Length: 260
Image 1 (tube, rainbow, N blue to C red):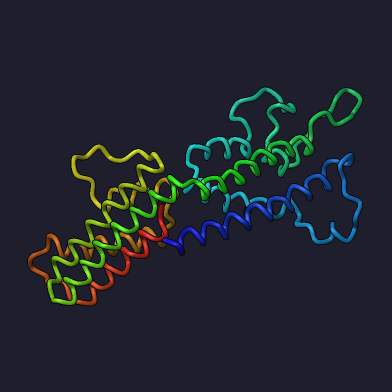
Image 2 (cartoon, rainbow, N blue to C red):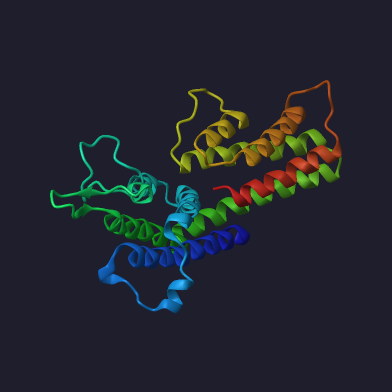
């Protein structure tokens, strides 16, 4: 669990620090009144239009994991409004900024332009900085710690069964941990699950991929673990082997330590 928290903290620090550099780049590029004239510092700044999208993608993933209730606000600050008659300072988005959208008055003076996106990015950066409070929340840490301890105990028991050649029982126990963890991830992210009495590993995994909470590589890995679990639990004609069950236990441990 400490590995997971430390990884999140490292990602957060990069997003915060690089976001500050991108904000400074915005002021230098779009707001002459707040431009920093220190040429040496400016040479080291990233180009906002080139680098923002990668920052946005990384930030969105971390917010979706740790602050899912703010993900809509975060995305709305980037996206152009779906319906609008004209571009105005109120509805100007970061997407407008990247596309170079402007409006002019009758004298040819810019009324709305890229400078208007600075406030949006400042708000996005504030949401990212709010992740720090998430790390510092004792309730969050306690919940993660207790859940991790419970899963570790069960996976340790599964490993004990495996060493004593109770392969199906070991695989079934590890499979239960995986299924329960995936369900909890779905609940945490408030995703809509299929209306079924008994949700399977595959049901949860497909839902998490559809919501972009797991990528294709992780989706395939979880599917493979689910197939091994089914061999242990349901397929009475094909016996699981020791390497299969070991792969399942170790794979489930990695998932419970990296996906929340």
